[in-house]
Image 1: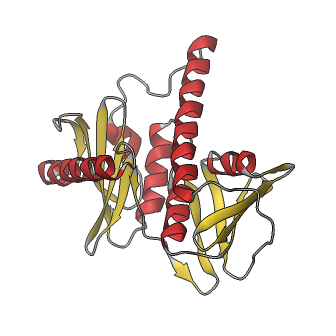
Image 2: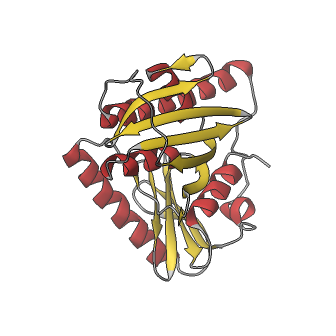
Length: 239
């Protein structure tokens, strides 16, 4: 489960970068608002289309794929750009499942894809993404808009940090992890995966790893979703 980010609204709808779970968050938001229209997702010269009616996805298409196969292929991209077109509709219906089922299944597929990639790297002897001896400051220190960051154990014990207010940041982050986890379990939304919280004076990004949490504070003037994307890129070792 991820806590919804705040998306920027424009005259034409919503525009933004799709990174990590952002597209799933957008779909969830549109479901709750009973949206009718089309969401176009672009990546690598390809365009996937998702059609909504009263908050439910009724049709999806990507190249020669349609229905659930197209929906799953679009949401596991993990990157790209999207646009929302409220006035574009269709009479076709290739999806009958409720949106909540589609989103939960998409999270499962994303996890399986990630696990498969890790297994492939191990089988081929590919170099691991994390470099021994590289610190959080080395990875994240040059990201614009990031003012504080702390890497903790699953119990909330600080391991590495950037800045001087790590204790306060850990307290906020662990409270969010605990609260969101309980809400997710009670509502059947699954385990906590991460969050991007937009605040009045600063923003908070929380990422979960197999053995750690990473809590990051983002400056008020910066877009937290953009900083989250840069953090993920830096942690994965991408240039």
